[in-house]
Length: 253
Ligand code: GLP
Image (cartoon, rainbow, N blue to C red):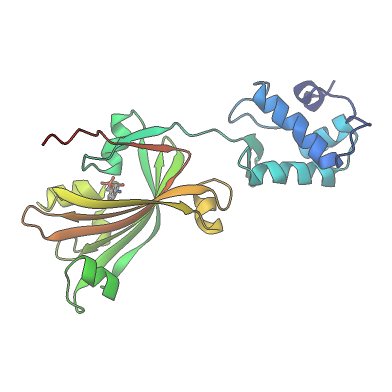
């Protein structure tokens, strides 16, 4: 039996099942993932092997695979085939500590990395000027980054920092807070707002999740000791990768 036949239970697709062929093929693939015959990051056999094993056309195989890619069960890499997607390790994050992404991931034994999406210097927008207590002629550094942990995309972050605290966006290599600390401008307090959001198709593609997937949208405005705002960051964290945890205490009269 071919590898495809062995992996997916082989044989023709059930004749008496009225569902379209591609859906029946999807059931076979899903089952192989559920029972662990196919594990996260395993490569699937080629389209031709699957088509031969089930006596269906390659168009049917392609349709079945792309449906599972859209649902986040499989991942396709150009030139290297189709793989079983790996569910990210869920990260528990305390809501009361002011930490950086780099610090958070290292504490969990995950290697943080960055993919730069954009960075530059601009005049502050009216919204940024208001948030960061700037005047309209003040300049800011804008950093847009995809944050990864252990190679898995975790969050998209768009940070704005007045140039008086960060004169050049190229100064940031891995950690923004490390650079701010080295310049004596590490924030010591922050206001953070969390809300639910559905990812746009572009952001979902960056985070390797299906379009419209749930995310946590987090805005952070952080301050120096003297109360001067130093950073305004908007982030979109993968909803399937983060648990935010807060400790609650009873207010005693
Ligand atoms: C978190 C916060 C951001 C902050 C970032 C700094 O992700 N949500 O507001 O800018 O940490 O992280 P790093 O120092 O790794 O760049």
